[in-house]
Picture 1 (cartoon, rainbow, N blue to C red):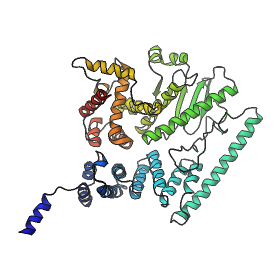
Picture 2: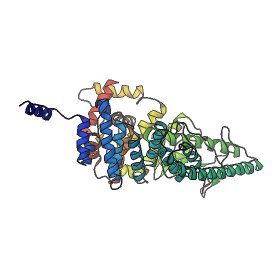
Picture 3: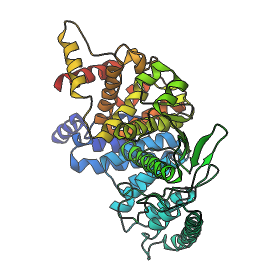
Picture 4: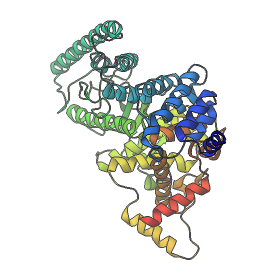
Length: 479
């Protein structure tokens, strides 16, 4: 009788999260396991159970890595949320590489190097990744961190020789470029070394962000060689990340060098900042066209010129009023660079606007811009406008759904539309962070709109658009 009572009590006791994860893992019910732990705050799970949940998710990641890398990535992502263990980070990095998320793979491997300095696998794989990206200096810094007595040491030693040889060749090329430029009467811009760059080739990929690769050697951005001229009479300067074009406007050699140097510096900042916030960056170079106010007006017309500081269109960033670079230009470049990243994730061109809601595309860019400007969201003046609107009877915050196909710039109050879009993304970031946001983006884009954004939102966040609209309105009322 007593044993029967004990059995009944055990059966009636609800499963702990760790027990549920172990059971689903044992059944190889990977999709059910993911859905069970795909949303919510990891801190809601007792600390002593998080390792168990993470371990079960890692098993799913490893099991699906070969045949379903996308689901493996999702499982690995959640495993890391519950516990940043070495197996979780390794599987997430492998899945990120298999799904062509190279920036996410790099960020994960860097975290592994930092958290597990005695594990040679993390610096070895990071070194391989950076060599593929032709970042010999970064690869050298990574490979030097492989412990000499680890099983990865022999392979790392061979790759380290390769990285050092490539670095020596690059240094030799830079020295020759500097010698030639001095002979021609030029001089490197302040705070940077001269480095070859042309419309056909060039490379600034040895720039290493301190925040991105902690504890590794850092090379400062190189300004590059003198630019050329295209068939339209515009100056053109290119490297592995950007193709920069602008009209000369009577700048002499020194002025061009200074202007181009500042542009490269701003673009490098945008590249690393977007990677830091979203865990993503561009794989392919993006064209950046810089206009004076008058030039922008001629190309895009009065209405657009009076409304926007920049546009991303067909694989190119177009910046308005860039004759003199100021804080607004810099924030605009960061904003538009986000669009360039999102477009590439969705297949390049303007496919992000074809598959993703307009408010979501603009909201991601607004959120990153706010982070860059170090502000919490809309300006106080805009918040006053929104609160004034809500104070009227039956009034509600501008609907995100109303901007599914209509871009914010075409709404009656474009400024408010952009800010409401940004608040929508801010709520998603607050809930689950950047990994989940980018996972949602890929799910919609890779399926070319199938599943729909609303179905993907329900799958990855466990919420509907109505839920999100309500959260945005509540966040506005709290401010």
